[in-house]
Length: 304
Image 1 (cartoon, rainbow, N blue to C red):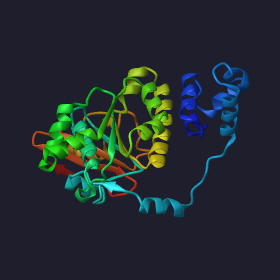
Image 2: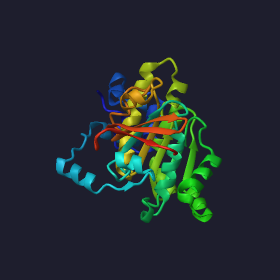
Image 3: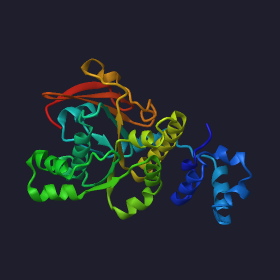
Image 4: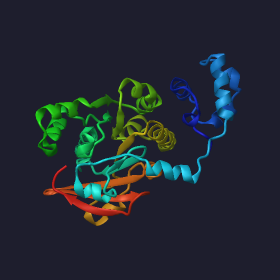
């Protein structure tokens, strides 16, 4: 598979220009006269930068350095003892991607809000004191819902609840190209919003369905590009990225551990953990249905 332009060491604005003009992989440059075609929307210095980046080889990391990175990784508690236990007793890891999968209305939004609030808590309470970026693609974010979650979280004082809410920065995204552009410009976002430690995308499935409802091949290609970009952002900025994806079909307690996303396994390929949710009248079933870090398992919580 040819390298994505998003994997090249190029400024975010230049990556965005290339994608907007139909250049998604290095192989696309071989199909047309490079200098002539690119000169229509790039300057000569930009063309030279692109040519140099396309010829550069990906860097390798030793197994030792990978292990050391894992040993020094930061975590924050979800404030749900049962879920933290499934996640090795430490919670959500920074520098990694976590996928949350479930049917519509199964509790993904409630969990995402809890994670944003929990990440902001001080270290003495299991948090990291970090800000969160909440990318809303379906209009699911509710200030009232976030406020209720903040006040419900360990019965916090109103002053601390206000501080928690002030740490959540919401972006409303409607289409696939907007989501891609947002992550292309994440360096600028991180410099504008200091101390970002968590990024939530709720949901990652919808923008691609909305933009390419009948073009499965196009969706899959963009999924692959975004997954690479997410991995780079998580590693470079040492942030936890939580992706909400829609379940392929309704599931219950009998197959919670084998649940699958309507997007296939594209997010599972880059996620360290996959959390599956199912709502019931008296609470929620939660499963760690896939993980590169911990054994799979199930738990029940009465509230998110």
